[in-house]
Each structure stands twice: as C-alpha cells, then as structure tokens.
Amino acid sequence: MHTQNVNVKVAGEETAGRWGKKPLSYTLLVAENETGSADESDVMEFSSLAALKKMRRRSPEKMKGRYAYVLSSGADSQFRHISVVEADHFKQFVRLIECTGIDI
Image (tube, rainbow, N blue to C red):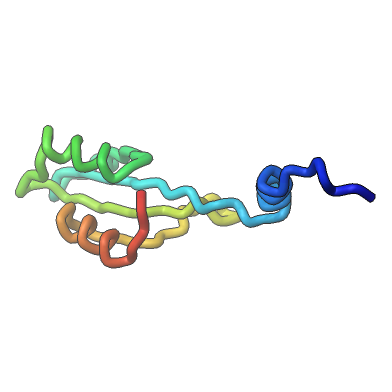
C-alpha cells in the first residue's frame, strides 16, 4: 500500500467528521410577560448572544415585566429544553454565560 499521495490533513478531517462528536449548538430562549397577567409568556429564540444584546438595547426590560432567560443545549427525549444557564434578569444572564466560558 502506497501512502505517498494521501493528504494527511484532509484524511484527518474526514475521520474527525465521521467519528468525532458533534459540537454542541446552543439556543438562547427569552420568555417575557407582564407581572400579574394571566396571558401566556411570549418566547423568543436567539442563535447568538450578540443578537440578544442588540434586541435588549432596542427594548430594555420593564419594571412591570417578568422575564426568564435560558441557555439551552438542545432537547431531551420528552422535548424539554436542556438548561445550561438560567436567570431572571438580562445582566445576570450575560454574567453567568461569561463565567461558564461558553462562546456563543
């Protein structure tokens, strides 16, 4: 068997792609509702922390609002989100993500 013409870099990438673990993809979920309201919460999904920060700059949290922030790493077999980080306030949520070292 001759291996002179094999590109080692490409062969390694193919092997890693086939047999390696898939990288985790994270989803940021934000639920907001007015305090004391019987209505269901509005839920928004973001793929990056930058998009969430941009939205929060445009519409900051209100005092009469109730918020829930979740960083999810997917869903389990019963279709419930697997929570990595949870918080009730935006700044607290951003700090917790930065403390975990997760790059979104």
